[in-house]
Each structure stands twice: as structure tokens, then as C-alpha cells.
Length: 126
Image 1: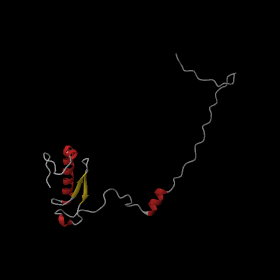
Image 2: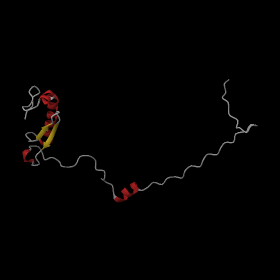
Image 3: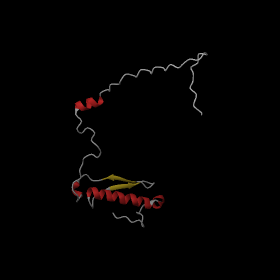
């Protein structure tokens, strides 16, 4: 189906007609995405919510409708288990050895004054 920015689809509510430019952009983006994946003339079903959200309902699983090469049905994303053997996984999940806590630093002995207070250093103000 061809969409035109100047003419909204028939059967839209008043709010949807006001939101038509935003709906139009979503329809064109969805159409272009499906054409890139499945080729031209691929039937698809969509819905438009009352607030203008365009959702893809269904794409036929039969590839006879498509003129494009068969789509790859591999899952997208990363395969985190690729090349991860059971031994390597056990090494990765093993608890790390933590070094012992450092010993407290020795207190520096400061000369005591007659009152028993440690003498404090005065900054050089000269």
C-alpha cells in the first residue's frame, strides 16, 4: 500500500488524523524495513493505536510471498557461549583468591612534650 503525507488513511479518528505526519513516518520506516528484509510485495499486517503507535502484527512465515533471498533465521545479538568450554567456564566462575589484608602501618614516634602531647609540626610561614 502506498502512503501519502498529504492524505491520511481512511477510517482514522480525529486524533489520528492530527497525528498523521508521525504515523506516516512510522509507516514508511516499517515498509522500508520490511522491503529490505523480505523484498517488495511482501504482505504484512499492522495496527495503529489510538495514540498513533504503528505496530507490526504479522508477517507470513511462508517465503513464497517474497521475491527476496530467504531470510536468515539466526538470532541477532552476541553468542556469549561461543568458544567457552566447560573447563574455561569453571576457571572464569571460580572464586578468586584474595590476598591477606595489609598490616597496619607502624606509628611514627613523635617526640613528647612535657604535657604528654605529641609535638605538632607548624607550617613554615616565613
